[in-house]
Length: 475
Image 1 (cartoon, rainbow, N blue to C red):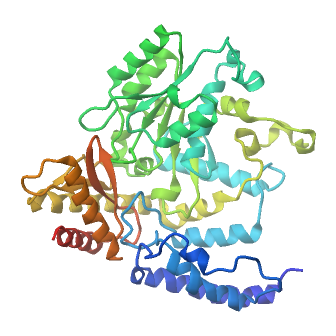
Image 2 (spheres, rainbow, N blue to C red; image 1 turned 90 degrees about the horizontal axis):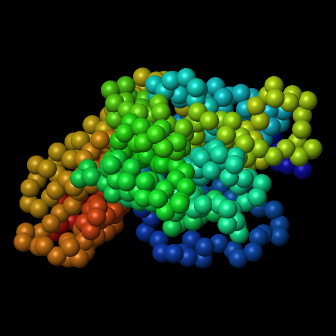
Image 3 (cartoon, one colour; image 1 turned 180 degrees about the vertical axis):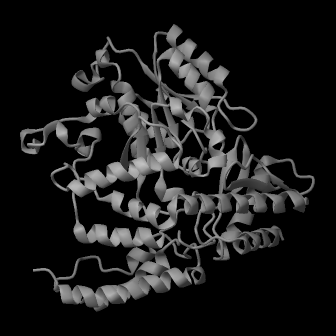
């Protein structure tokens, strides 16, 4: 038997206080833990306990084991990668989700899970200024959303017969090609690996000086492939590239896709949330012509991990790619009810819609836009500090959203290996401070540092302290 509701209540109150204290004091922790691989595992027994342990003992290990080994994504100084925030309404939503323990595989197995997901994804569509005709569904991450989109692209032409006959050993099936910029996310490659398209058939198209795909090069690559007997399948436009957050020319790419009858998928996993800010929507011109779009609320919409939303204008194609209904999953509702299991690999589905619904309601459209706008202002402030410094500091890419790529070049230094080592040392020293956590990337052959603002708790004081630490790290 389970522990009693009374015991739950007693420990839940204690845990609620623990969470409140953590959120209040998160800045007092080192954002990046000073642990070596294997150190946490070494603290724990190699075998499970034979006798039951008390919740008092278990919860005590949150402080002894968990917190010292955690990288604190909720920390205001988390400026590495694309930050996410476990906001209070999202945390409360997760608590209720765990208590209800719903499985939304069929409408019947939890009607509210299905219908709330329909509602909240349509709320996002409106929040982002997207027109009618979009079908939305929640997955775990953008990697899965992009894989689903490319699976649908592969299924759009039933004559290929891939659903039934597969791809292996078929001399009648041409090589299927997917196109994206040289800065498209690695999830495109992983989707190609998983779907049997193969890494060799992901065509990386050159970008311009602002790291945006060149449409003329895309058109050229498609024509060259057709001339070799290959079958162009889909194009991935990135709205907020991972390294430098550039936005591909979606409208021009859409024109090419329409002319060539190709599926257009827009990866807005990070940048897409900026659609909530009306004045930023021109960056996404042409989005309305896409076949599918992915946006991750767990990145910049303050929703706890994990929560990705896939939108598509081709839900029938997506369903055709995945729907398979054995007898034991048939229900009396038939086509009257939506069953999300028909639109992806997963049968079991968490009630992710609840936390997203609570976040959108708690902040509202205006509050969400205000917070994203503020993060972009903080990034511009940091870029201004770098530009104004001189002394070898340089902003290395445009700053359309809330991420800044920059580096320091010592006077007279021209060797890229030496410059890379110098900036790696700056990053290490800054991260060792425990106050902030930054990351790096490469732009061409240039090693650069990244500051990515996206946490609700990050302020101008955080940005200025990060800059102070970087200046100090130069030595």
